[in-house]
Length: 188
Image (tube, rainbow, N blue to C red; front, top):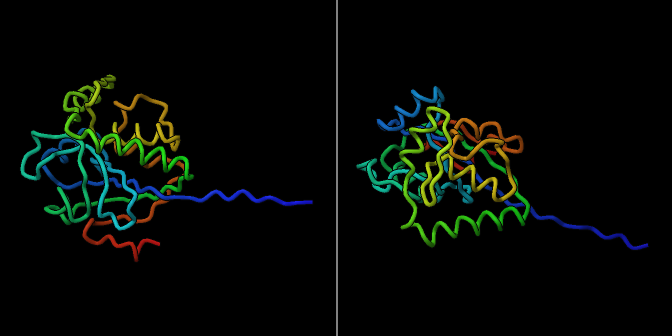
C-alpha cells in the first residue's frame, strides 16, 4: 500500500490597521468611533512595502489613489509615532497567487485609480457607492481579501470600515503599538 502526502505550503499576508493623527484621520476616527482610521495590506513581514488607498503626497490629502506605503515610506515616514495594529493571515499558495496577481493589476494601472472621497461620505450614511477605479482603503483591502477567497465580509465593500478587519477569524494579532516600534523580531 502506497501512502501519498499532499503538501500545501502556506504564505502570509499582513493587515495593518493604523491611525496617523492627520486631520483627515482624526475626522474618520470621530465618525467611526474606532481606534484605527486606515487599513493596508502587505506581504513583507518587515513592513517595508504595503498597499492601500490614501494620499499620494504626504503634504496634501487632496490628491489620493492607489499607494505603496511602508514603515519608513509615505505618510509613515512623517508620522513615525502613528499607532498601528498588525495581523498576520496564513494563505494557501493559491490564495497568495490570486492576491499577488490582483494587486499586480493595480500596480500596472495605478494612474487609473483614484481615491473614493464620495464613497467615504456615503458610507457615513450606510449607503453603498461603487465606481470603477475609485476606492478608499478599507474598500480596497476588503475586495482583495474577498477576491482571494480569504474572507467574506457579508456586506458591500463600500460599507467596510477599518475596524471590520479585526473580525477576521483566521487573523493572528502580532503587534500593537507605534509604527516606529514595530520590528519583525519582537512580534513572534
